[in-house]
Image (cartoon, rainbow, N blue to C red; front, side, top):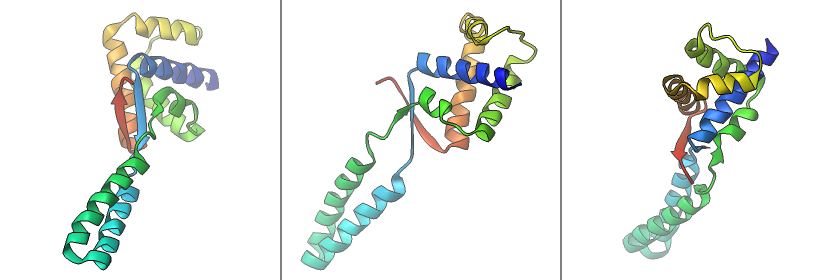
Length: 141
């Protein structure tokens, strides 16, 4: 069973790498706190004009702090704890059904050769990353 989970994780990595998926847990709370803090300090120092200037400056700082935190989805998948790998495995096995394979290489070859199945696995990975991990996903560089 552990080998089959490893094979499916490898498949998920291949499909998400092929789609160039990157994900980041949303840091909106941190960004909002920085923006709010900037508006507060600006208001204390310069009144109403300071609120606007501090909010804008704080917003830019918050944006800068939370940007660039996207990691490749294959890396995220390989770092998942066993319980989360099991959940992703179950989601993907619902798509693969009774598909039979010998090893991870054969599984990847079978799925990558079937456009419909490849798209379904990609959708399952996307759904898992956005719903279970509550991450934002981007495609490409």
